[in-house]
Image 1: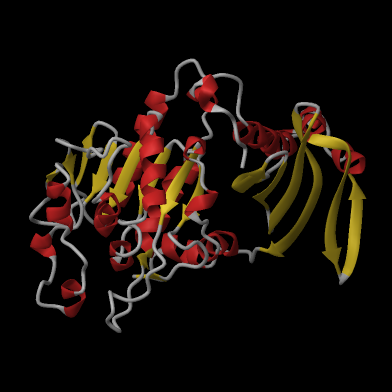
Image 2: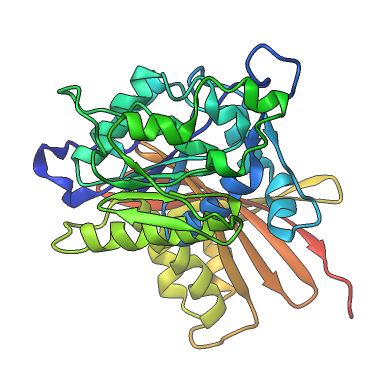
Length: 365
């Protein structure tokens, strides 16, 4: 996706972050279910997405991963649990062989008991992490996800975090008498120390504890998920803010989507002409009939300077070479529209060539 050659330096940063997850569904050889911690995935994911980053998911085997520790009374978890776009990403995680380290600014290891298996010993994922770090990127972990960096070394076989402070879920807070713990392949604390890191933790726990040492950002438990994510964003913006070259594809697609959202809200038909291909059409279904409207008709319905009560939000952007799809939500009095866009790049510019949409009525309060 959107491959640039970093021989030209990291000036054309991809604004992408790689999430590492596990395929393991049991603790070792036991019958105890293991899974990836849903909150530890969606909280950082939400922070990164709002900061403008795209997120890819990888697992040792690729494909579906088990998720657990789900709290449907939490509004953020509930929103992502019923987001088909997002859940599809967890069902179709990438294989490490599909990943090129130069496409990512940071790597994030999510937690849950499953993180203890498959990921730590995966040589391909280790190489990806080392490659991201070598290009001024950030390595971040949370809770049991820290197990993923337990054996992390550079190409010379030296610890990548020798002398650095690292945290994760400590033995101090584990229930060592329980079968799940007895099935662990190693102790995170000891593994980090064996790899010449300085393992640190909060004895209290559940207090948002995290540690930053150079470009390693690690959190102790789920309560630190947002802290870790915000710190990663802060470091990336500092590292890659100066002297950036022309806007990358993600920024350009986001810009034309804003031309659409803001242009329709503020009565700016010139911005709509900038965003849309001249031959673009709109499609929807009304009374079980396909309804097609030309882009020119649509644009002509917005008069210059006439603002209206429309509020829009970009939900997602997915880019592959010169093609992209995007989703947005538009709120108007009494209705919420969901827009899907097909966007193509030609002659050096991105243009919306197709928009399909649906809507639902909003009950009056």
